[in-house]
Length: 61
Image (tube, rainbow, N blue to C red):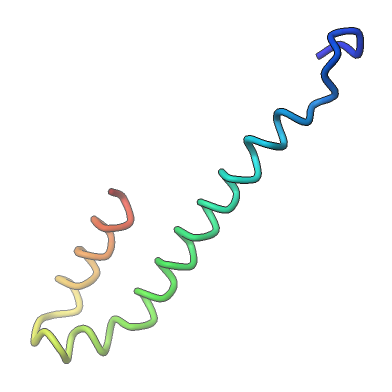
């Protein structure tokens, strides 16, 4: 990017801020889900493996 183009890179920051916020929310949500695995196993009467697979699919979607 050249200074004579009239842009100083603010457009890139405007795009980076929402992307960073979205990534933060994904990490926060995944962390909360991983902390609650034992309670989910007890509530749904299932195995840890099934809950981990569900959380992985949820995170990837």
